[in-house]
Length: 275
Ligand SMILES: [Zn+2]
Image (cartoon, rainbow, N blue to C red):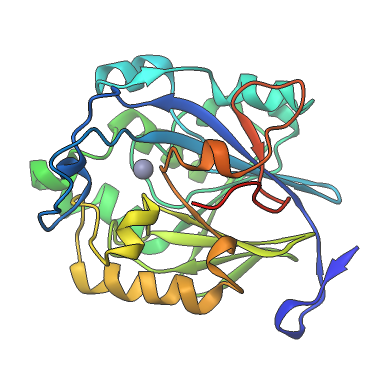
């Protein structure tokens, strides 16, 4: 099957979202915005997801989450390994053909040793940032995990790393678009599905509210690039319903859960509730 949004014929993928962790439930809303918000500092917890696109002979993991130890050390509640999430979809970790790294922060880059047959796709600027002199600065280093970064270098030396720079088709129907902002090499992922092209924003938009209020998440390296990225997302998507924020718990009730699984939703189906 193919979809024909913007005149391109693309193979369609099934696209699943795996919830692997959540923040403490009392996380204040003010932690999620660069500028002050009038939310009376109510709780606004954060979810941690990764995504998998399955189509043809490809099993493409989009971010690899992190492991329990790393997650708990950062103060969050680990719920399940992404590998177990894949298993509940009938996918073995060894069957993953590609891992698209939206960016190299700790919550997006773990578990790489679990996917020995996958090619990694990382933006050049992100690799340079995470392995270069920017890491002399603790605030810039904080979102990265040195062991995870070393795993990327190991994959590189094993001929399993590929680097992107501009808009790139990873495989037909799966395209990355660099946007920067939250991290220098942040890339959003456009996935061809039965309901059109779904745009995985990852951390170009943690919450729907970051987009609605044009108010960035406060972990940021370039505010203008972040705001440009929000505009880019909306220009790219056929409708706001085609944009998937990276960390928003609203997603749990917006999309149909995959029957027989826990913590997995089908993003290739239309939303069942409005935000
Ligand atoms: Zn993140």
